[in-house]
Image 1 (cartoon, one colour):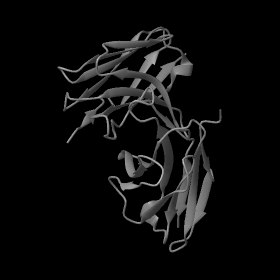
Image 2 (spheres, chains in turn red, brown):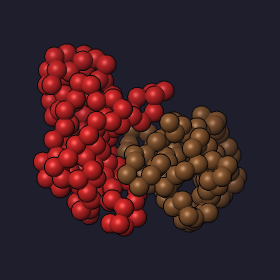
Image 3 (cartoon, helix red, strand yellow):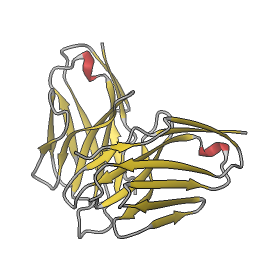
Image 4 (cartoon, one colour):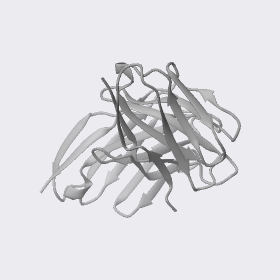
Length: 115
Length: 112
């Protein structure tokens, strides 16, 4: 089991450029999440998907879009990157109640710098 | 709104010491609580998951306890080692369909 994988590991963008962060999990989890982690701010939820075909906003969704491509994959898109989006982005997944232990697993992160 | 607090933000101890990391939360109506470890530049690794009906969970030298009525959890690390140096985060899930609320973490340094 690879668990939760993310690509790319590092990315540098110029202001206004777009990019998509990819996430995949092989644990047959229903729920998937995107977080950003900033010094002093902790982890903040951007978007989540409770199941295939559904997505919902989290705490800080502005400037981002997501796609739940299938049960395994959940992508995060920055349409027009801004320096304020410089951060470390984490994808996570977990089972849903009734599916088993409701334990959340994280990917290794994508370190994004916007200049 | 649930708030999770971890104090102090940083802790330095000599190797071999037993230590306790604290986590407090404001709303005691939680579904479960999870402790994570994060090494510099890495993702979060799940250490222990405690369901709301449980009082504690153990894994190796780690023991996590939960007291819902007082809104507190502790992570006990026995015989600390330099390899335990990392940031430890706790997170609570308010209900079966709610999201995790994270503390900001405690950065632990274990001196050889």
